[in-house]
Image (cartoon, rainbow, N blue to C red):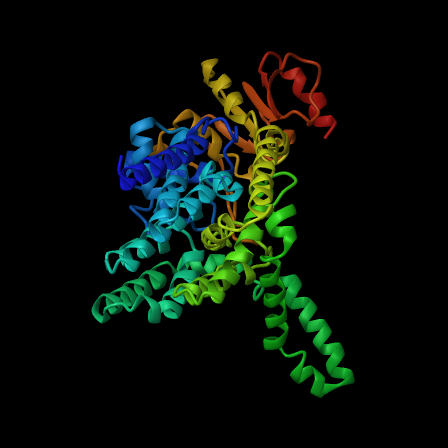
Length: 513
């Protein structure tokens, strides 16, 4: 067997392994969709059935949804799996899982390194994000494929970068900065580059509604940050006007805030022990890399500069630019907005593999042993502790509760609590509600201070804040921790279903609100 054939067999095994850990039980772990996933699935289904989104906009470039204005890439891509497999959890997560596999292949093609492909296959961040419908995961995969093509002087890679920009908002920041910084190494042709810049600029302007809404989460628009700056600067100015104009001007102040946020993305807490603060993005009791990977990445970076590797500068630029989209937001470090860190750290780690493998002594065995211990620990946290963890952060059991109510052939009013949790999306997804009826007849709340609004009535479903708003129900779906009288209930995870038997059960519930 030739060495080339043997190499192809190995990379095929790695890719198959990557696919298994991403697709196996994809609809069951996590066992509940978050509201972004539900919104993606519902809008894709609505487009498939009517050519319009949930608000009746025909084939939009940005999706209003609950008022958070989602990017179009993942939603349009999801039309295909919804068509093939139906509207369900698997279809909604399909592209993220496939993107995780494609990222493994792309990292191998970029580096020609089996180590890089293996590390990408089993990295906790890569696996975790591939099993949830994250738009950022598809955007990252598109970027990597585009980068590989551009490194091969195939200018069609620009098309993948444009698609990445249409998929997740962080790409609108990272890709143009990365492109500007690495042009000297890519040595692109002038005409394709000009066309790319023009197309990307037009796309950015066209997606202004998305960009403007995302501005609400930046440090520049955060009321608490602005209020602290104004009060502190006023106090400093009263004592020392010169100090206020120099050290406490807005440019220096916000620069410090962004700098602090930026450094958080490289902290051991974020990378190794805790991860980001958003509960949808956390792996219990760990960060997003194994300790062995970070040690290898540091050694790989040193190796690149020590040997004056031709890739050293543009990989360093990639590493430094990756956290910027997260750094300007109020909830930094943010795992999704920092996802461009993932492949560059993996690639840096792979460069340390060859010199370490040839090193004498115990170092290679120690690193391999440490990696295996890290992997087993991640497996335990993800398969055992993570299902317990997300029960408090995701609507576990709501799908089953809705399907149970649907199986009872109920024709009267069905009430569900949780208006401001966007719970309206779950009956839409799990009953396959007619999108045209929803577009025409759904009732929505007024936008809140963040500009978000939620549907609260469509068909037989009404979403309420509490039981006071329930009128003549035939079924009620509510969290199990809410008070309810001693009547027959049906338990589904975090939810209970009460079927109408006598209206007398409702009165004591209201009195105990």
